[in-house]
Amino acid sequence: MTQSKKEIIIILSVFVVAAVIMAGILIFWKSGEKNKFFTRTETDKSIQKDNQQKTSEKKEKIDCEDLKGNWLFFKDKDTSLSFCYPGDWGEPMFNEIKVDPEKRKGTKYNLHFLQPNSKQNYPLFSYSTLDYKRLDIEN
Image (cartoon, rainbow, N blue to C red; front, side, top):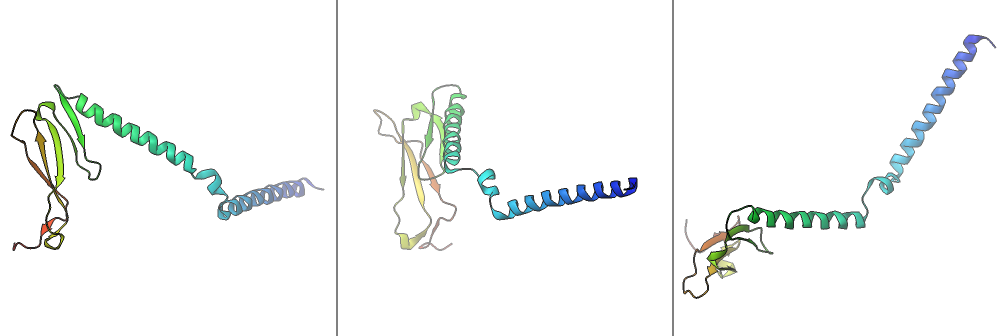
């Protein structure tokens, strides 16, 4: 065999091996087997969720701790409302304003603070969902 025939055979062999490797990768990729290697397991997802929750809780504590004075953290479990407030305001009371569901769209809440040994419940805040609208009042 001549030198040029040997070179051609080597080059063709390299192309055949490369084609076989590429075909194997393509078959592997399309078969869904990649999911075993590239997706997170439920355990991984649970660990990630726990870590995110711990980070969030830590961040919430840090947010109020960074403020000077006696600041406390408020977070309602049913809404997205959360904030820091001075501890001398008292205990936060968060409740839905009761309006007949047929006369409203969305939800509205009141937030006030019970102060020990006081008849005053201040400050008073009102919080409503973005879609809140009274249907029985003309605009």
